[in-house]
Image (cartoon, rainbow, N blue to C red; front, side, top):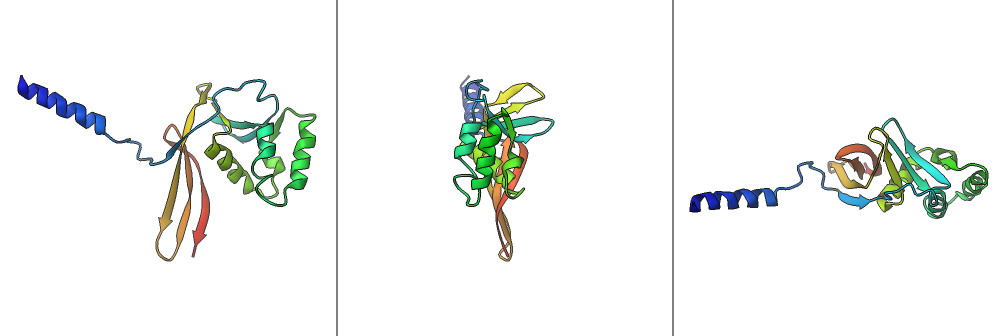
Length: 164
């Protein structure tokens, strides 16, 4: 009987100490979890494909990245405000000076949890994502960035720094 109890104790300790098998060492970021019609009366689509729709409220967008962080976005901010007067849904790519800024805008809102992700296949909202920082390369060339995961599947990654 004593041996059985010791074996059970070892099994419980093993499973209690088991690490995340996904291999992702990312930080969990909790997202907006409801498409509240009051908050999303006007919204900006940050990403849309066959699996996911990611959007943020217009008020959050106009006060955040890139408008209040990057220089040279005054004209695009004015255009977004103008377009929101007659459109309820805007697309982020229409308000970027540089097409690459769209991915960094998406990354900004995901990292801050200021967006809503709808899983189109399951028709549910995603409550959290994982953001993992990475660096790869050697002493001569190094690339660093971030990877964004939904349900342990890579959604996309950014390259934030490259040294040569």
